[in-house]
Image (cartoon, rainbow, N blue to C red):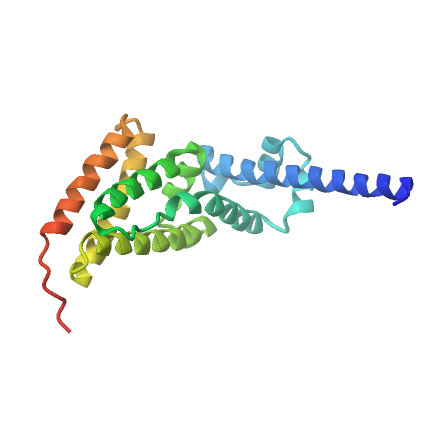
Length: 213
C-alpha cells in the first residue's frame, strides 16, 4: 500500500475510533441522567452536555432518544449477561455449592457498577421502557438457569417446587443487591451464603411427590 493510501486508512480508523468513543460517552450520559434525575428529565441537550459534546452531535449517533435508550439497554444487558448466566454443575454432590456460588456471582455482578445496577433495578418492572423490557429477558434467563441448578440439587424435586425455588433465588439476588447498594448489607458474601444455605435446605426437605398431571 502506498504512503497516501496508508495515511488515508489511518485517518479513517482514527475517525471511527473517535466516533465510537463519542457514542459510548453519550450512552453513559443517558444512563447517568436516568440514575440521577429519572426518565422524565432526559433531553438531548442535557445528555450532550453531560457527554461533553455539542447537542447536534447526539443526532449523528442516534435518530431519537428512544433509539438511544434501546442501545443503552442492549449495552448494559451485554455487560450484565455473563454474570447472570451461572453454570449448573454436572457433579450432583457439588450442586448445593454451585447454587451458593451462582447466587454470589450473580449478586456481585449486579453491584459491580452502581450506576448500571440502580438504573436496571429501578426499571425492572416498567414494561413500557426499553430498559424494563430488556431486564425482563435477562430475568427470565436467570430464572431458568436457577431452576436448572435447583433440579441438580434435588433431581426428584416437583416441577412446581423447582419453579418456586428458582423464583426465590432470583428474588434473593435482586433483594441482596439492593440491600448492599443501600448500605443495609455490608458483607455481601456472607449474606449470599446465608440465604443460599436456607434455600438449599428448603429444596432438600421439600416433598419429592411429582406434580399432578
